[in-house]
Length: 293
Image 1 (cartoon, rainbow, N blue to C red):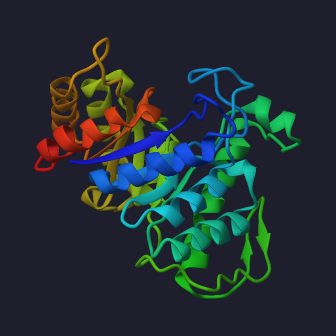
Image 2: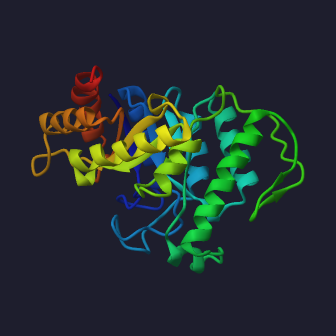
């Protein structure tokens, strides 16, 4: 099992002055500790399950390009970009830029989006749910086309690209892996089966929920003729290491349970990550212990 780190909050002591230096320290530590991936949310306002709406929130791709410049090995991505935030052609150019500048370490993390408040707040159109899923499928098709290297028009219901050119090409082969985030059984997991290289599920429901969602994904793969084993199965959870939280053994047990349910790449956010020591502990005691799962 691979372990990733999500950084969803930047409300650290002495912020905002401390955000840049502390984010760099977190990124370097994760890179050196053996984390497989490093993720930020693609939100413009803080979300309620993490903190107060007025808390500091960095723009996702600016933060990832910053992290790319101070790391060497760790993969980089958003968990995940709402499809309505950016025109798909511009999004693919942005992810390609991250991939080129990082030496081939980018993911495209994408989903249908949901945060109406930040969209309305910053003047971003917020279509109804059904339309956002239509746009998501078209964005996935545009990603395939632009990363194929073939320059030709794209004509969909919502997006029209007259010349879908993408130079320089991405360094990742055949392209940066596409991760579709979400657990919806009828639409989201079908899009994973049809277009994505990775899924991202929430670990909070436990191993049984994960097992069920992966069975649904497997059925979608059978229906569209996709090899289920081609899809990287990831999940997002929370680890709070410390005297009043979890110990390394508790984290290892969680990894074992989710690994048995089918997860290959487990991504944690850590409320006390800015203290650095919990991050180092995860690298020293958990990552090596779960590497063979």
